[in-house]
Length: 471
Image (tube, rainbow, N blue to C red):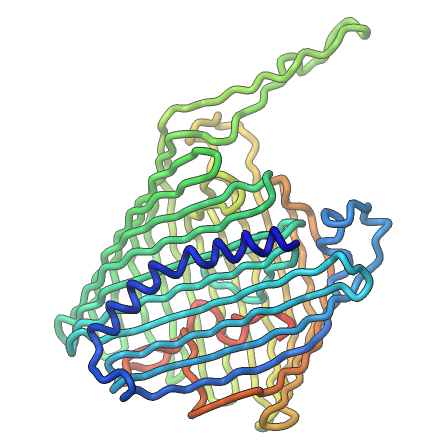
């Protein structure tokens, strides 16, 4: 365990130099002195328990599913939220949550997860501003499941040992009240300790423009180019085009519709095709079967497809909901080749009185390998991975500095891809959060950084769900 944790921290440390360069540039653009800004900090402690059935126990203990009983996990965590605003020209928000989990029945089943979310915004001029956001999630041996994820499909391997990292930076220029343009770049990485899963790197550049037809109706156009790089030496060039339309429905509901296309070209199939040389079988019963033929196809071929989606969000003082669907090209994290993804999501939350928050969350996703063009025959078997989950949760503020959280989740997964297994299990979680330190007003979360005069828009994830279930 010590070796694993050392390796994870080495991965985490290697990320910070690039982030520090962006922070230094934004600080140089902001006004001085630095101490003139407003600092807000909260630090919460958390203790809780959860039950995941026998999820994740098979690979770590070596026992079969029938030999393993349902096990409960105890959890302890710290949740730091920090924001800093300097004369409305520079804003920074940081969320960091280390958590430790241990089985109450098996001393060998332990794990430590780290969640980091850092965002900044710097106004270079009155109409030109820089935005950057970095997210990191490291979790050995334990589930990475989140209830609502609007942008990416979910895939749960039996063994954890995963590191997810994403970094996005953009430069936005408002030419006038009606027109604007932006350029940006993004890098992502998902790595696994499991040798049967392929590490994946993504790199993307994009350019876009927006036109505000009326005060409330906005049209957007984007073009992007990227590269998917896999541990199995596969590389895939990706080109995307997209159009979007955003329009409020009533006072509190926002509709967003997107449509476009993608084009991919792969230079290496990565996964070889296995052919049975004698599908009928040997005529002589004493004869040994012929070994399978492994055929690797290296032709550079391309494929096009459509991408798009629809999203509805409503924000009220006591009731919020968020629903949508998206179809797009995906790196196929862990699969070692690009995929087409479908994601549907729904999140509902309501406040009862001043202390009780109730929520229902759900999402379903599917990843399907792109076959028929990229080095495979048209009748090749498609490998897909389907996931669905639903969560009912509550949060009760017993005291101003003491909060009780709990709920129930049902997780289901169907897979034709090894080593992603078929999963079906229940999760119960209960936790107690208590305030350890605070200064100033409530800090702004990384998803809330915006221009002061702009309306608040819902993030790609519901903010309450950016923490693990037990929170």
